[in-house]
Image (cartoon, rainbow, N blue to C red; front, side, top):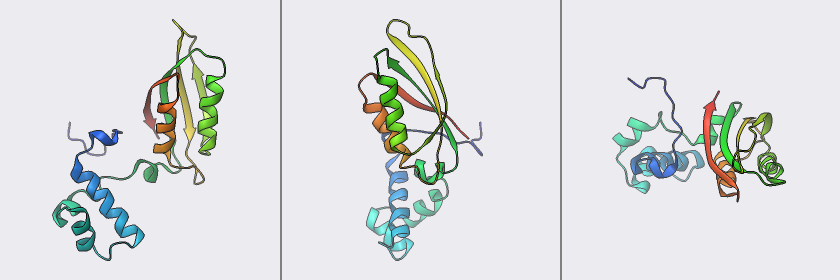
Length: 147
């Protein structure tokens, strides 16, 4: 498994600190808060060699998601109106819902798969996922595909 051309979706808590600092340095450069790579790396506390080693390999999830289709899967308690609330969260971020598949609830829990198209007007996808994860009755939100 050489990893070339492979992509992974991981939660922030699983990402090594150096990679998070590379993201922060990139943000400083993009926003003009740092005039050079030297300034940016000094501000975040990493070496320039670390920055150059990883800068092309890590991106904020939402930055790389524009114009793509994302398929989410999760479990949901069998409660009246909960699916409507889930769809409201997605609509609130202006993602275009393409497909919805919900299993018949077993022991009060249904499995759900939703494919959404991320458009230029779509808000921060990571925040959308966090919003779904925080919902009462929604369990185990995962991105299973990104095309």
